[in-house]
Amino acid sequence: MSSLPSTRPFVYGPTGIRPLYERITVLEKPWAKPVIRELMKKNRRVSRAREEIVRCNVELRRLHTHITDEDRHFSKVLDQVQTQPIYGPVQEYVQRRRRINRYLLERIKETYDLKDFTGISKPGLRRMSTAVSARPSDSDTTPSHSEPVHSPNHMPSHMERNEITDPPCDDKNRLSDYSDSDDDDLQDNDVLNEGVSSVVDFISNLSVHG
Image 1 (spheres, rainbow, N blue to C red):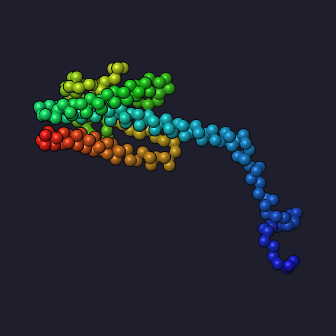
Image 2 (cartoon, one colour):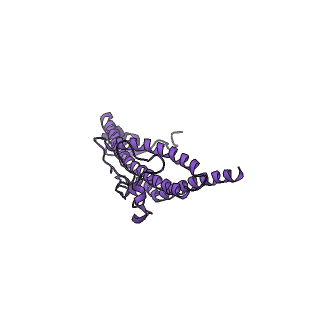
Image 3 (tube, helix red, strand yellow):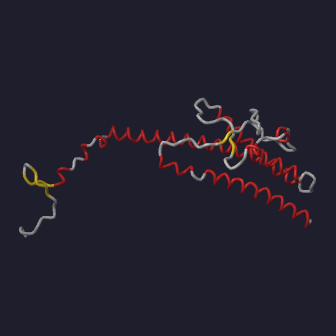
């Protein structure tokens, strides 16, 4: 049995043969100390928190932009169906949505008023839209037929608009999360148009069959 090779790894050194595991000094590394490891954890948490703030600023402005675009779209739809029998149900649907949007605008305004707010406190312009189509017309500045989307803090839906651009992120691996922003905007427009169209079609069928 003594002639069989040993399965334990050994290394030849100036002091002779000794086991290889004696050279492993992981516990002597600086990051192995409890204090250093705790500082590393806090540093990672602070870095992730800063990235989250950047992302929240982008999403908050995107929500503000969507609300103003939706209100402008509702005004156009109400003008189109104003002389039709379905105007009443459509107006009721728009009023319900505008009440929700007004509540969201109040919370957005409270966020804008925070002392340490680092974002842009006004809506933006969708990247796929044109400045002419997004520019408010005379009808947008006048009160609509239903409840307006203005908040009690005087945040008009036709306020000045700039293009939304995602701010840079320190972690390059997280930039892929922002690559689908344009697709999300197009999907939001499709969902909004389909929702209003489905309501109008449904009410139209009810009025015909009734």
